[in-house]
Image (cartoon, rainbow, N blue to C red; front, side, top):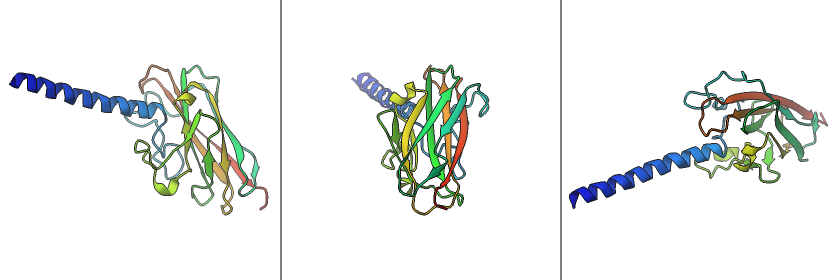
Length: 195
């Protein structure tokens, strides 16, 4: 009877442990934690120890880019595109934020469709601070099958130009591990149309 109890406890512990690992892996596959865009004040990118670090940052042969308007009007939403080209990766992902010239995170992001998601402070796996609500956007689980994403960004009424978009992207081999994947960074600038 004692052996049976130990076996049941062991099975329950293993199930809980592997369930935790699986949930963590699934959380990362549906988007990285917040603050991984490479922007000043962020926690670097996903090209860190224990993550997608088989290769040096920006060492892959793909092109990773941001397409944003050259000018913006305060409060008027604009469309932004983040894309990979010349990529042989099986899965792709990104994370983006916007900073003004003073280093403040500015504007708000909004998804279009189901290939992107705005990081929520309520998502414990992403560890986003409440004051940064709507300031970070990334691919969704469905979006990992894409090589490009379009979404909206609404500029603030008070920001110091230029505003710089920072994005980090991951070109993955699709094997479900963090090894043998490339991480890229890129930026794009925009200025107020009414200086």
